[in-house]
Image (cartoon, rainbow, N blue to C red; front, side, top):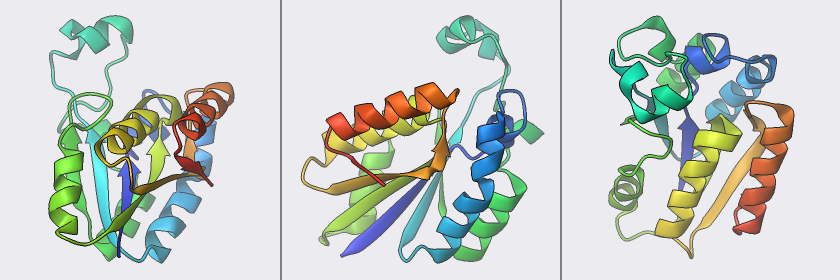
Length: 174
């Protein structure tokens, strides 16, 4: 049995940068510990935008430039980056909330073996839930979990609402 950990968008702009929150900062030690203790293969997603962000559909609805590739805000939080470097990981750049490439990457990594998936990261109510639901749709019989102590939402209320949505969709919330 293979085990996959998906570290979602633990980038500077979401932790303590353009869209950072005190809740995001607070989960960094738990995220680093989870990575250090994880026995399995790790994938880390990178929210990735470019100089034309403000002209995109997302930029028009969220007019805060963030995670522009090549900037400091696009980089992983330093503590999380150090933990990932020690363990090794596969980076996954994504241009929208959920990675449409991730399911195929996991299927290839699993080969013929059964597997489980656990997600952690930011933001619970946007990118974590989007990736969790994409993975659940792609792998309806696979055990998929989210560690709520290693996630933070745009607000605490939205974090809780996203966890409830995932529970409703048969994703285990730890």
